[in-house]
Length: 168
Image 1 (cartoon, rainbow, N blue to C red):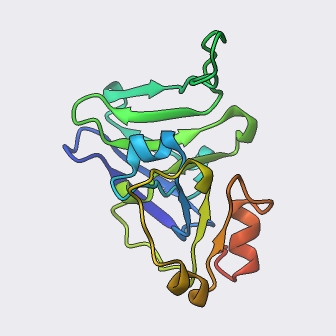
Image 2 (cartoon, helix red, strand yellow):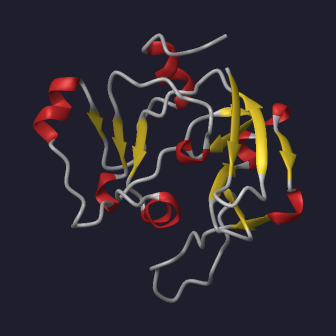
């Protein structure tokens, strides 16, 4: 699926291709929540890194979270995961991790192309959920949602294929 995305002010625009465009995974970790999650979570989708084309590269800045944040007497160590944002309006654009060099992970809210609606959601890193974040767990369970305190065993590609969401 061809995707188009842009920041709020329009200084950065990009296109990429995705086989896994369903915005199904809600991440409640403090990094996603504080970077992208006005509802208390962030949602990333997965796209092919080699198809990424960018207008406005000069407006893109990188942020790497401290892996050791909150660990007393531990020096700061930047995460390998890189988060990119617009330096003009601050919109979060996508993540990239060299360990998964074939992929980028655009934030679903930055995509201008209409995305398909998932039939269920996966809620991850619930052990980091802010106390004010609430959701109707009974309704979510009825829909078939899955819940994880940490990362699930299944990745984005596997989840898309398992649910017949994978687009060739």
